[in-house]
Structures are given as structure tokens and as C-alpha cells.
Length: 150
Image (cartoon, rainbow, N blue to C red; front, side, top):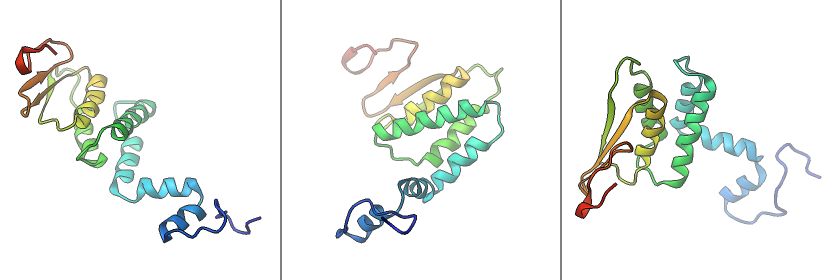
């Protein structure tokens, strides 16, 4: 029976230092460290605790969606960068009836994240990807590469 709070997960780890740390440090502490080792954790926490127009549950659902997208799509941005833009989107006055436009969408990660914020504000996301010369709009059918419909 281990004598410390950091119980050993595997008997006699002989791997790298990093693996030995993983084996000995409690999983919740590892998750906490991974979350806050960059500025992303601090940005997410400040976004969640920020008193804004939306409830904590709505902000938590949005953060969850953003991380879900990040786990499925390779993104070239950090969560801190996305939250800066999302925060600006969420503070657009309700009387402003406009769309949001993104140009150059790489693999679509930021597009999906902006769409989550746009849905909260009832804004129409319009995306232009120059590489394929297509226009994607969820409410309008548009013609794209070789005349195919989207």
C-alpha cells in the first residue's frame, strides 16, 4: 500500500522521466496541470467567471463545444485566440442584425467555433475559403467548385 497521496499506478515504472511522473501523479492533478500550463486555462477560466450577458451554464456549454471541436479538428490557433474573438462576437449589441464573415478557414476548426458563438447571438456565419473559391452559408444554397451546390 502506497504511503503518499501520489499512489503508483504501475508497479516499477522504468520508462522515461515523463512516464514516471504520469504514473505517480494523481490523474486529476495531471489534468489540472495540462489545463493551466498555457495561458489557455487562464483564458477559459476568466471567460467562465466573467459576468456577461449569458449564464454560466451557457458559457460552460460554449467552452465545452469549443474543446470538442479542438479534439476533432486540427486547429492552428490557441483557445485564448479564439476566446478573444468569441468574446467580441458575444458582445455585439442585440439590435445589430448582421452576419459574421470568416475568410480562409484552413481545416474549419475556427469556423465551427465561431458558429457556436454565432448561434447564441443569432448571427449568420458566412465563410470564404480562397483555396477552393467556395462560399458556405448554412441558410443559403450557393454554387461552389465546378458548380456543385452547398
